[in-house]
Image (cartoon, rainbow, N blue to C red; front, side, top):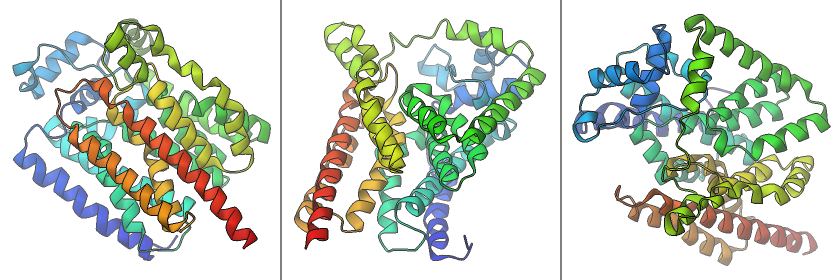
Amino acid sequence: MKVSSPLVRMTVLFVLPFAILFAVLIPALRPDYGKADFISYWSTAHLLVTRGNPYDSQAIQTLQMQVYPEHYTDNDYIVVSWNPPWLMLTLAPVALLAFEDAVPAWIFFNICIFGLAVFLLWKMLYGPEYHPGYIVALAAGFLFFETLLTISMGQISSLVLIGLVLGVWCLRSNHDALAGAAFLLTTIKPQLTYLVWPLLLVWLIRQRRWRFFLGLSVAIGASVVMISILYPGWLLAYWKLMNSFPYSTVSTATLGCLIDGLTGIKIFRMAGILTLPLFVPLLRLLDKKDDWTAFNLALLVSVPLSPYGFSFDHVVLLPAIVQMAIWLLKREIPPVQSHVFVICLLATYILRYLQRDPTIMTYLFVWQPFALCFIYLIIRKYRGLYGLQQQTA
């Protein structure tokens, strides 16, 4: 890949000003920008890198009240990170910084992560050449409400996204060991990839891609060793924390939570089991080397059926949005239908922006992945029919 290629230049010209604007100028006008959720990840990682107990609630509260007292003006609770411990190692570079410096640094990195994700998706799904429509793909990625929400809250769902994108990129490049290490990032929020992982593992075993498991094992092993050196008692502390995980009481953007909120019936929080019949058809797509279609369908269906997940977690659906944009840009859909699909996609963006009121119950955002899934399936159907017509013409 040439550094001077038009694709790289356009990515830098688009992403860099965006990153500077959001990391420097906006926080100067809005002092709370990028802090809401980042405080939990920073405080946990900071305790670890300073060799403290990253799961000590009292230590977390003391640290958070010290560096972000404004949070406790209107709230009387600490913000806790429930994620697997290797997340702390991933965030170690920014955790070494003071909180006020770490916030703009993470905003900057977060934006670069999204830019890299769109760049790699374009190269995998469109090709290495530049096309003016690449601007559309970048805009679709950065104007997606959940992208902006992730950045503004200091969320880490972007790491799941880039882990997935880098993992598939490495698998396609036959760098299986690196793919295993990259896919470890997708486990920091396992509720988002609970269908992707079984699909991936079965496919890898059938294809005898053993180096993936080597890379994954090395990444896990290295993480465990480093965490154990920094805080030997991490495993017991993490176990105690997870035993108090309140997933069944928190309002999240899932179908189960919606039904629970409206009826009080909690059993539908386990609706993810309904994805089981999709396993074989999705595995066939992987066998046909249609990896992104398989993973995108898996995510579009499984994310809203997850037992736990917020609207900003919908950023893992960005590959599906980019793939749809590329299908439309490559004119693989009849012109009339293409215009309809563009309007439908724009409508989902606009409707989500209209729901930006923070007082709206979180479970009312569950419509978004279902709407995107419906549009994705219809576009894919028309794409197949149009392709057959072109072949027979």
